[in-house]
Length: 167
Image (cartoon, rainbow, N blue to C red; front, side, top):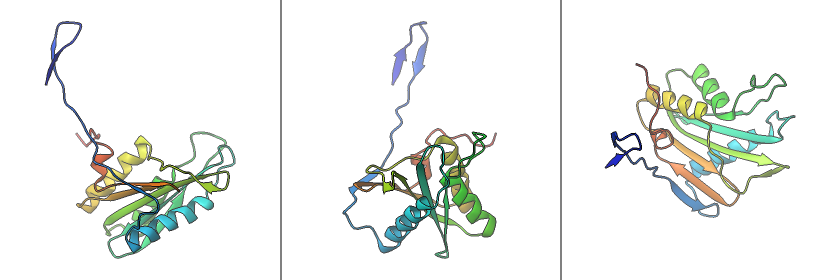
């Protein structure tokens, strides 16, 4: 597709799309995905969020079935805190550096209850997930759960199609 910009230069345009699977939360997940999302919710309950009260939990499943969880940790010296996704991934790969990452589930809570809609990882977390996927040399599924709806991508590149990569 070509488009003429106001400065008269002919620009080539690319359309980038995301393939996301969406289902009602009542739709049955596989037992292992349901367990992963449940562990992410339990991790969210333990988050340290005295400033925002927005608790996020993440659960990472490794190739041998090991599940490692993490949650967001806030700090008065913002931005010294860390997101749940990076906490879980860094912890999992620090403990098990030679294991592959199969999937990560993410969910959030406010006012003591799970958010109705799924939440999405920030850009920094997407970049870290992409690096974990490269280390694993296989797609990492990302499951984003809310009380009403669940969304999933089969590969991190769906969430970060124009990713930064080493030069």
